[in-house]
Length: 203
Image 1 (cartoon, one colour):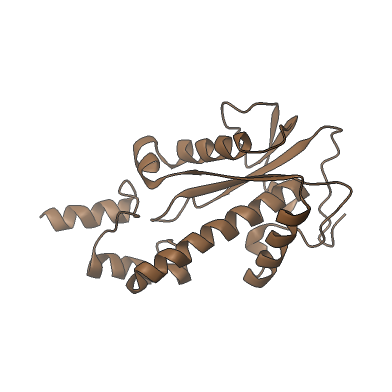
Image 2 (cartoon, helix red, strand yellow; image 1 turned 135 degrees about the vertical axis):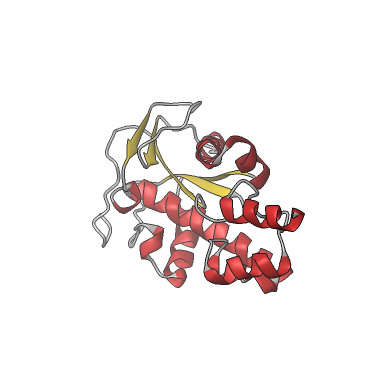
């Protein structure tokens, strides 16, 4: 048990936790992670990534990559999000994360209330699972650290948009930057603020 009270999911099976980050932002891929923890090497401090400081997330991400039995990242691109919608893209990213695991899980625990199609094993959806189950918490941390790093890299290319600060979400700063500097290839053109900006440019 961790200090936050998150237990390993005792199913007697090789269990992967799966979570995603990036459904709401106006820019960037949606990123999912799948993690199979080692019950013999518990990691203290696992929790919903949103409830952890950036420093703590980075430290835990290093521990997870070091001590977990398997870690995998899956994603759906901005183009795929625009083509198939964000919900389906999120499910696709989760499936890709599971498919990328070097150990085949016997059970997948999915954060939320929907189970992606095409998983290679039985799965269970757990609402707010990232705050309840260690495997899902670990996946949420890996997904967030990965996506945040990508937004920081995008910030270096386009500092005028402030991606390092808002991570692509539709903050006032981001919306103002859209109006001032226009739409980037990394923006989701099916999302209303971006779609509206493109429509205004065409007028």
